[in-house]
Amino acid sequence: MKPRRGVFFIICLLSLSLSLFLGCASLVEKPPPLPGRPPAVKPAPPPPPKTMPALTAVAPEDVPPLEDDMDLLSLERAVAGSLRYFGRLSEKRTCRFGESQYTVKEMKESLTLFLDIMRGPGSREQKERRLKESFDFFKAAGRGEKRSVLFTGYYEPILKGSFVKKTQYRHPIYEVPGDMVVANLGKFKTKFRGERIVGRVVGREVVPYYNRKEIDGDGVLANRGLEIAWLADPVDVFFLHIQGSGLVRLADGGFMQVSYAESNGRPYRGIGRLLLDQGKVTEKDLSLGGIKKYLRDNPGEMAAILNHNESYVFFRIVEEGPVGSIGVPLTGGRSIATDLELFPRGALSFIRLRKPLLDENKRITSWVGFSRFALNQDAGGVIKGPGRADVFCGRGLDAEVFAGSLSEEGELYFLVKKKGGAAR
Image 1 (tube, rainbow, N blue to C red):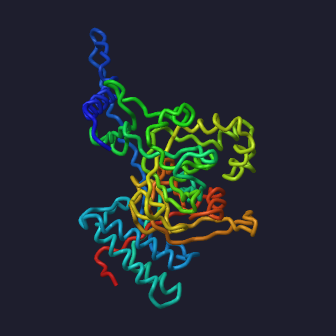
Image 2: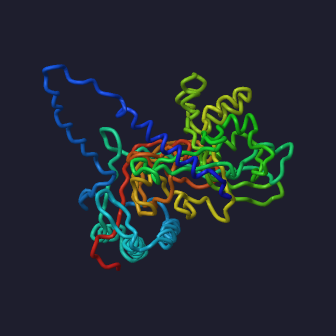
């Protein structure tokens, strides 16, 4: 994106305005004390409550059995992705595990040691013993009274599309517009760390960027050369925005991989809750498949329902994918998305929850408990706090059914090699 004159000045004015607004209470004049009375002495404010760290260390005996329900090849592929990520960083950079810190060098040594153990000889129990002897374990604080983590799923859809607009392909996916401005507020005030705004410049003012209705309904981005591809189904486009990446099967027989590039900064609003509140679907039908069916069965209502979610995603073409927020390809079943302000990027994790079992017609027949190792390689707009995680379920119909039905409470652990231990 080419720089534009005046943008930095406008962002500075916006940041200053935010600061003045947030601090306006201090500008109100206080009344003088009553005559003959000394000013009241205010008691010292109580100390702020100590918040629980997102990760806390757990003793080896409190770590659950380290059983893994997937193959070693997928685990090796996911670990290789995190090693590629750490390979781009300075080895002196630190990663936080709750109140503890580890260097990037230690993170790489951890993953190498982990693979040595998992590839090596011995039974599962023997490998588990080595892991508990060699690694520190940290458990996610979770949420609610049970301190559990809510796991949901996401997947990579396979979509029908074309490079050019045709009668069958009329619904565009866009690249990042050139008039979009992103301001990381933490660069102006440390108290705004992790917060940002997305907008556009109108005159001397920064205003919110266009919402979904303005983009898809009013066509404010049309005919600006921003279309990456045209898809056949508007419902597919909408859920591509939610999943963040997809494989487009082109009309000429080729394929194109697209991945998340940026969003418009508008709030995400789930349409499933909207349909439920309006009595248009039941709890039983509140699944990805059920929501898609309602939208396709009621085309006259579709625009209003989709526009309820103002969030809009822009894409880029990638050579391999899907690509997570740390810049490496995701591995189905092995990559997870968490709040990367709280949990270490690229780190090795261990998850425990339930999963659905499917029959030959892709219908759920039962639920069973499972556990596996995973790598923290992605983030999500609604995946916030120590009690949320999203499992990347892979590509295609099985992954769609799995992800669309997953909403399970479970446990999330992180592993890192003990300090001072030699990689072996």
